[in-house]
Length: 123
View 1: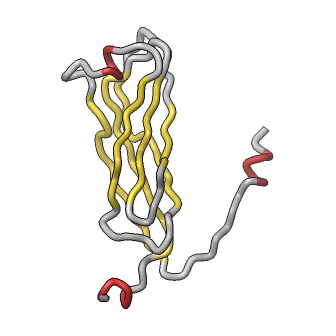
View 2: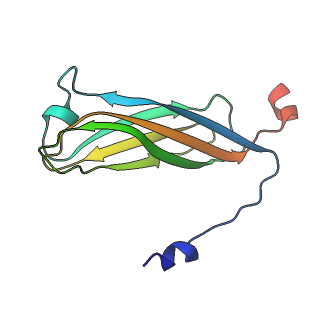
């Protein structure tokens, strides 16, 4: 197991690397009885983020859960993904299903890629 992970690695040398990171609460559905806390079945939260500085091309995105509050009465099921990645933005997609109850979730993320050359910014 895990051998495929080594085969799927990609190395991309970058000149003029830019890293943009942030962390914070993605949603709080317990206070207003939102669907992640009160619903059942397939549910999702989508949040579009705009980078404070654009990249030359769509960057590589890394996502992580930095906090979660969920009900102990059901299994914890979730997925977290970055979609619609462009040089200016991306969408965080948090999904759950079944009878899972998630009150709130916090995420951290990093975007790494080629920076826009400073000469191009001044135009």
